[in-house]
Image (cartoon, rainbow, N blue to C red; front, side):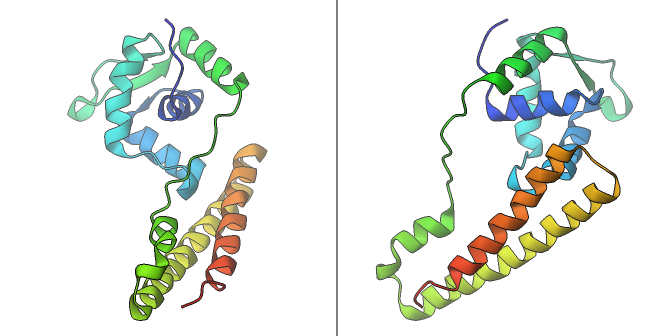
Length: 170
């Protein structure tokens, strides 16, 4: 079946290369492998799996405990994933609520602006710590070097963002 993969489908197919997984296991694996830079919510996963099955990219196994289904990537899914990997990179479209609010910074009063920047600093300190934990875990498990490189990007991103936040006039 044809149809360009969206990023959620591509992520799920990539994770299913490791073997059959339930929706809950896919969410856990996405969190462990991709970390906070690329999140998959439970609702995204459970909405996408039937669509992928309908396209022939995955096959659902027999119902397990609590009617959970383990999904397996099909040959068609492997071809679609390979085509997605080889396709031109789409434009990056960050939808960062901090940048949106700061874009209207002149409308903030000074106290609200200081609070906003302070909250962002706290959030990104937490994210930096999570990225560091992810990198440490991936190094200990001798994970795929590309998964490690992606996780290391998270550290660089958070450090750069924190440094940038220090420059915001409050």
